[in-house]
Length: 148
Length: 194
Image (cartoon, rainbow over all chains, first blue to last red; front, side, top):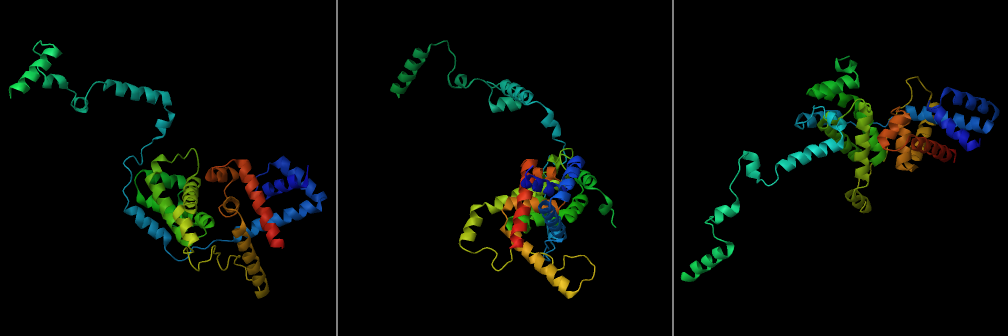
C-alpha cells in the first residue's frame, strides 16, 4: 500500500470511521513508518484543535427572533399529517386512480361534474330539433336574415 | 434543567407534529448554533448566516409533517436544509452582483472564532499567545479551503456527524466525504506548515 493510501486511512482513524481490523493494521504500520506517524500526529492534533474552535454567534438573540417568527407563522394545513403512506403507494396505482377520476369526468362540463347533473347539450339550446336537416336550417336562417 | 431539555430530538419532533410550538421552540434553542455555524462556514457572512437560520427553521416548521424519522436524524435533516439554503444564497445572482460591486458585509471578518476557545484550565500568557496564533493560522487556512471541503470538515469536527450523516447533508457519497475531509486536512496541514 502506498503512503497516500495509509494517510487516507489515518484520516478515517482520527474520525473513528475505521473498523477494528483495519485500525489494527494501520496502527501496526504507524509503529514502523515515521512519515505516516507524523501525519497521524498532525491530523489528530488538527482534529483536537478544530473541535475546540467554536464559531461564535454575535449577540443577536437569533433563537428568540426565529421563535418569534415561527409563532406568527401559520402551519400548512397538511402539517402533522403522515404523508409517508403516499410514498408507499406504487406510482402506477396513483396514475390509475387519477385516470379513473378523469375518465369519469369525460364529456362533462365542470358544472355537471360538480353538481352531478346532466346539462342539455349546448347545440340543442341554440337550435331546436324540428326534424329539419342542417341545409334546411341554414336556408331558413338566411331567409329570416333577408326578410329583415 | 427544564422539561424540554431532557427530551430527545425525536420526542420534541413528535410533540411539534402534535401542534405544540413549545416543543419546536426547544428544537430551535438546541440547534440554532449548529445551523448558524454551517451557514456561516458556507456563506462567510454573519448577516446571510442569520437569514439562513431563520429560513431554515421556518421551512422545517412548515414541512415538519414531511420529516421522516426513520430516514434521518432531525439534526441531519435540519442541516441539509441549512446547507441547501446557504448554497443557494452563495450562488445567487444578486449576491454575485453585490460582491462585484463590493457592497457586501463591509468591514466584517469572514469567520469569527470565540476569543477564548480553550478549556477552562488556567494558562500562562505565553501559552495563550501561542494558542491564539495557532487559531488565527487555522482560521486563515479554513478560509482558503473550497466550500465543500470546509463544510465536510466542520460537520465532522464541530457537529460530530458521522460520514453517513455528512453524506446525507451534502448529498454526496460516503467515499466523497472521505475524500473531501482527507483533502481538507492535508491542505490545512500544508498551509500551517508554511
